[in-house]
Length: 458
Image 1 (tube, rainbow, N blue to C red):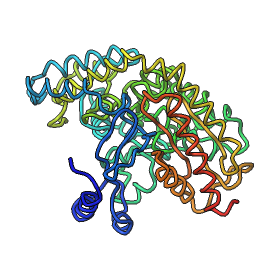
Image 2 (image 1 turned 180 degrees about the horizontal axis):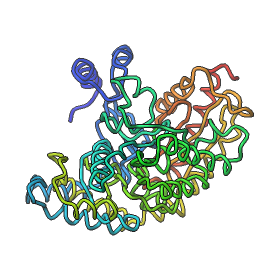
Image 3 (image 1 turned 30 degrees about the vertical axis):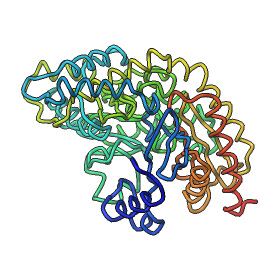
Image 4 (image 1 turned 120 degrees about the vertical axis):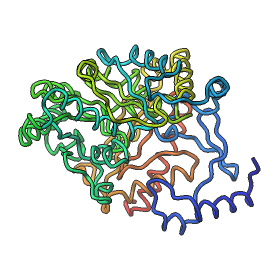
């Protein structure tokens, strides 16, 4: 592929004329001169069309767990395309890769999650869950159990149903969302909501907000509670350790299904196959995506617990839901090869014992910065919360301005980090080494200095 200034200008102009990007202000992008064009990637680095080498500390979009340029994954796709490039899983049909991947996933997942429904994205997975859970309760003779409870700042996708599950205020401001039957409670976000409570006490209070909402709606109407173990796109909100055990107890008490969204946290991100292991959770349903193929091909999976699956099988009747690409054989073949790499190279153990603790240590070094209010991490996912007043945990006004400034300084210095409101987020490939963590954190510190200047704090 030819690159250079002429190619870059042509691509930028064509992209601006024809390509509508996701989650983008189209007017602002055009005024800024168009997109950054990424042309190559290898390991943990990207290369743009002008030859700049960039450290990807976000693993693409939280997903490139085994890094870029894995020939084994390309070969798995090629081999499967040669043998069987596509066939659907409708009409009582399956393919060997879809069968083998379902078996592998049930062996890795928390106890009781012995069934799999495939899709192509986390959004599709969570859309599926809404349909499946309501169908389950209808089969159980409780069709009135329709309501889903989620949390503010949650992200569960961008279809109409999955965006309704989420708690993103900006998304709810467009398209008449959330749809009826979706309720939201305060997240376990101590920095913003904790006030004078200790993190442990606040975790219990945030869990009680779930119970209060169940009681306000009526347990006989609540179908499920859904939550990410760590709220990734919400700003890497890591709950106090007191939170999840109490939420799980509340769901059991009121016969509410527990859905744990592991789209971001699955496949080694937290130093476990799934973050449910860290929190001791046994979900009724668990959506997966992103790291399942390390982003090489689109694939998602809904892990369905025995309680729900047994009813679907026992009661029978068609489940009128599915996708053309459910269980796509090439995607499943790549997922199997990806899981082999994660296991063979000990990436989960590396995150748990080496790079995860090191990232936490290096991020703590930023705690002394004048505009850093909190640092938090688990495994290879973390956040640095920017604020105007550390002592009172006061945000900059307007919220989000400092984060965008800091993000742009980081990218300008050759490191991709993400800003969520004013939290600087890191979620790198699992193959990150300590030297890569050093580079990312040192770049972030320099960018914090520049951001403090830009915000008039120095």
